[in-house]
Length: 579
Image (cartoon, rainbow, N blue to C red; front, side):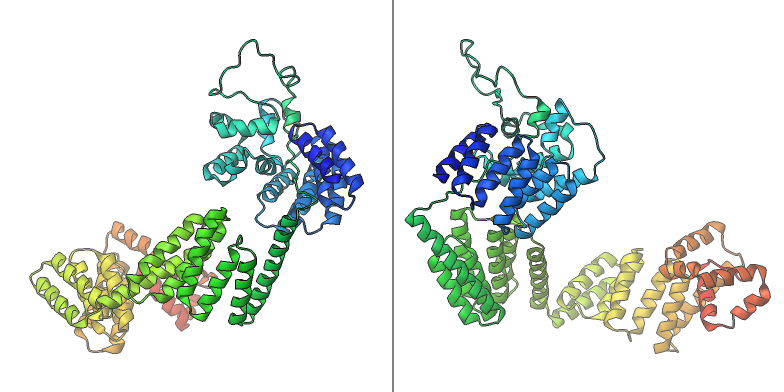
C-alpha cells in the first residue's frame, strides 16, 4: 500500500535516516505515481542527503502535479538554493507566497534566498560559525513547524524575536543558549540529543547510544540537513473524514457565492449563503465575520455584534488565526461606533479596537481606533458646548486681566474656549495674556487661531503683529499690520504698529543696532522658508550680485514689482541693508 510505504518514509525521515526515507517514498511513488505529496517528501529526503539535483527533479514534478500547492514551491526553492542557484530559489519562493502569502516557511526561505543572491562567494563555515549558519537556511522555519515539540514556539513572540536575533547575528547565539527552547531547536537542527542541565545525569553504567555518542556529525554538514518533516497527508480517508471534507468544500462554495452576492450588494442573498456555510462547517469563523460585515452594510449593528462575539468565542476554542480574531473584534468595534449616541458610548468601541490591535496590529484597525477617539473627543466638545457659560467665563477672564492676574485670566479663557471653541474674541484675549507673560509662541498660536475663525477681526491683527514685533520679526509684523489696515485703514493701533516696524527696519539699515542684534535677526530670518526660497532663487541671486557690482542693472531690476517685493522682504528681515 502506498500510504503504508509513505508512513515508513515519514518515520525514517523523522529519525534522520534520509536514505531509508527516500527508498520508502520511492516505493510509495511506484504504487501512486500521481500523488504530489510523495514527490515533495522524497525531495525533502534527497535535499537532506545533499542530492540537490535529484531533489530539484522531484520538486519540479511536485509543482507539475499540483501547481496551486505552496509547499511544492518551498521544496523547489530549497533545491535551487542547495544547487547555488539563488535567483531561481527567489523566483520559486515568490511563486509560493503568491499562493500562500502568510506562509512563514516561504517567507523565511525567500529572505535566505535573497541574502544568498546578494552575498559574495565565501568559504563554507565550520565550528561555531557552522552552527550559526543553520539559522540562515530556508528550511529552519519549516522544520520547527513540522516538529510537534517545537511547533508551539512559533506562536510565542519572544521566541520569534530570539530566532530573528540569531538570524541577523549568529554570534548572538551564546546570549540565548541557556533558553531551553533554543537548546531544543539546536537538538532538532543537528539531529542529535543535547543533554540539558536540568535533565537527570545518566549513570556511568549506561552505555552511550550507538552512532550518536561514537561520532557526532560535522557541524557544517548537519547545518545543511534541516529539511522539514514531510507532511503526513493520508492518501485514503475514512467515510467520516470524506464526509467532513465534502462538507467543508460545500461550505467554501457557499462562502464564495456569498462573497459574489456581497459585491453585487445583494445582502439578503449573501446572508443566506454565509448562514448555509455555517451550517455545513462550524470550524471556520470567516463565515461569521463575513456575515457580520454584511450586517454592517444593512445597518443591523446588533446582529453584527452578536456574530462577532460568536466568532471570537469560537475562534478561541479552535485556536484560530489571531488575524481572524482581530478581524472579528474590528468589525464589532465598527458596529459599536455606528451605534454610539454619546461620548461615553465610544468607550467600549475604543476598548474593542484596542483588543483587536493586541491580536494583530492592522493599519485599518489602527485607523478606525484613531477615528473613534477623534469622534469621541468631538462629541465631548459638543456635549460641553454652552455659549452662555462661555461668555460668563470670558467675563471672569477679563476681570482678572484688568487686575493683571494673567495666569488666572488664562484659566478662565481656556474654560470659555472649552464651552465655545468658535469665539475669536477669547483667543484674542488669551493671546494678550500670553504676550504679557512672555509666552510668545503660545500667544502667536492663539492670534492665528483667532484670525482663522474670523479673518475680519482687526483686533486679531494687532495681537499677532505685536507678538511678531516682540519676537523681532519686523518684516512679518509689518505684513500683519498691513493686512489689518486693508480691513480698517484708519485703525490707530495698526498704524502705530507699521510705524514701529519701519523705525526698526530703518535703524538696521542705518547700522544703529548692535552686531549681535543684527545677527539674531538674520538667523531668525534664515529659518523662514520664504526667505530661503528667495535666496536660493537663481534670478534673485543674480539681482543681489548686480546690487554689489552693477548698480545700473540693479536699478533696472527694481522696476520689476516682483523683484522689488522680494528685495523689500530681505531688507525688512535684515538680510539686505540699503544705505
